[in-house]
Amino acid sequence: MLLDELRAAIGRYVVLPSEEALTAVTLWVAASHIQPALQHAPRLAVVGPTKGCGKSRVLDVLHETVHQPMMTVNTSPAVVFRVIGKNPPTLLVDEADTIFGPKAGDKEDLRGLLNAGHQRNRPAWRISGPEHKPTAFPTFAMAALAGIGDLPDTITDRAVVLRMQKRKPGERITPFRSRYSVPELHAVRDRLAAWLTPLRGTAAGLVPKMPVEDRAADTWEPLVIVADLAGGHWPTSARAACLAMTQHEAVQDEQTTLKTRLLRDIRRIFEQEGNKEALRSQDLLASLLADAESPWPDYGTKGLTAFHLSALLKDFGIRPANYRFEQGRQAKAYARNQFLDAWARYCPDPAQPVPAVGHEFAPVRPAQGKPPAPPSGSLPVGPPGGTAGPKPAR
Image (tube, rainbow, N blue to C red):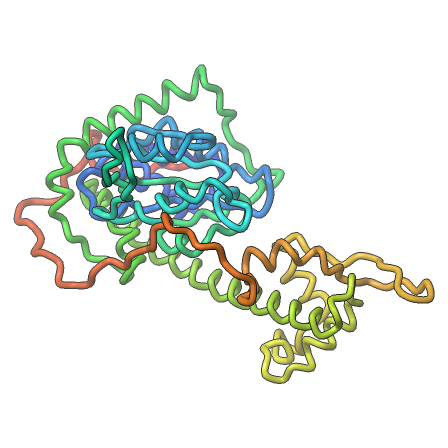
């Protein structure tokens, strides 16, 4: 089956977090070939804690397999606005972490486009042309974003999230060499287009049964539609991947919320201590545990410990270090300047004025309502190659 060939090809070049993630990427690639028929354009968020986790390699493979790829590492937002039309490209954004946060600067237009383009008919209005007329620019396009650390909720809520990790010593991949790899991937891409392009009309009318609801259903529906068109084991595999990955993200959201609470509490403690340069680990921990209304006294089996504190802060690049205090005494401590970037990104001080951004797009929640009746006819419409079971991906 063609989707199995694509899955195996992707699995040769990258080690993904799980078999469900490999299934999801395969279906996301295939969905890009029917995106003119879709109501929602799911994002693919490829994130990792450090460099060297395979994020850019994922984009390399996507570039050779998706519909009409467009890399946007240094592309002007004005160019992106003008190339998105009735048959939009698939946007591939590397170093996406530089687009968001306090240091985004002149990339606010691109950030707004990525937020708005998840749903059809959410244009961006700009003054354009020699007559300076208001012009509506389409924003609807599928997009894959690779970056270090978590992306904003406005992206991850609309995304299939791949949390990449460095390969273990025993995990092997095939080296990606343009001379050999690109022709192989292009051959699969061309066969995907030949299969799916004529089925865009059929795909537009499908209303698949989803295992999730609300925005998660909007995001995963294009992938499930492709799976239903393929038949065989794919409808079951797609829904299993949807459930597993959305549940995993729900757990991540809980952990992220707890970490954000920790950052806020630590900022409060530093303020109470007069914003000292550093606080001893034991003093910071004692202050956290002294708040009976916080989750820290009940964290773990015996309350928050120094080990727990270090583990929770590690993802923000914050670690304790030896610090020399008064009278020459040394102790493990947390320096205040280590927290400044994390505070600005994850829990900005509400007391600080936020500059107005007039051209930012506000995310619009899809309207709820009864979906149209599914079309009659025989489904699934299998791809070339029949409906054989899955082949080994690695």
